Length: 234
Ligand code: GMP
Image (cartoon, rainbow, N blue to C red; front, side, top):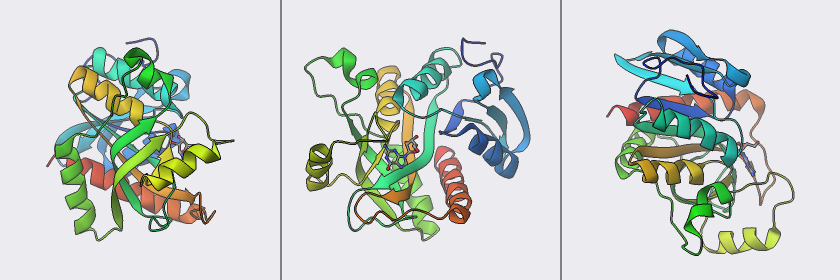
C-alpha cells in the first residue's frame, strides 16, 4: 500500500495501462481482462488487475494533468516495481492533417510543466517514448488500418486559456496534438529506466473545433486498449 494506491504488493502487474478517467479503467478491465479484480479505490482512482491472453495486466486511472499522473506513476514505479506504463487517452488535434478520431503515438512530449522540468533547471530535457513500445504499437495500429500519426505532442498544464502564441509556435514546429500527462510519464520512465508510451485518440481539434461524438469515444478507447495490450506483450 502507498499513500494513494491501496493495492497490496503483488496485486499490481508489471505492465500498467493508464487511462486518465478511472471509469474508463473499469470499463477496459471489464471488457478486455479475464478475472479482473479491483485493486485500488483510494480517492475513487480505480485500478484493476486481471489477465489478457495469459499476461497479467493492471489498468489504473491516472487522473487529469501531470501532477496527478505523477503521483500514480511514481508510486507504481517505486513501490510496485512496474516496468511498462502505457497512457491511453485523448488529445486535441493541432495539425490540419490530423483528423478527429485519428490515433497519435507520441514519440516525444514537449512541456512547460514543472513536475517534469523542475529538476532540470536550465536544461531542456526531451522526454521521449520507448522505441520498442512505439514500434509495436505502430504495427498493431497499422494492422487494424487505423489512421495513425507518429510524432511530437504537447503536454499542457491547462485545458482552458491556452496561450495562442505558444500553440502557434508548436503548430509551426509540427506538434501533432495537445494533452496533459505524457511528458511527466516519459520523464519518470527515463528517470527509473522503465518503458513508457502514450497512445492518444484525437477527441477535439484546435483548428477545426470539431469534437468526437460521444458514441465514438468508447470504440476509439477500445482500439487504444487493444493496441496498448498488443504492444506491451509483443
Ligand atoms: O479533458 C482533459 C483531459 O483530456 C486531459 O487529461 C488531457 O490529457 C486530455 N485532452 C483531450 N483533449 C485536450 C485538449 O484539447 N487540450 C488539453 N489541454 N487536454 C486535452
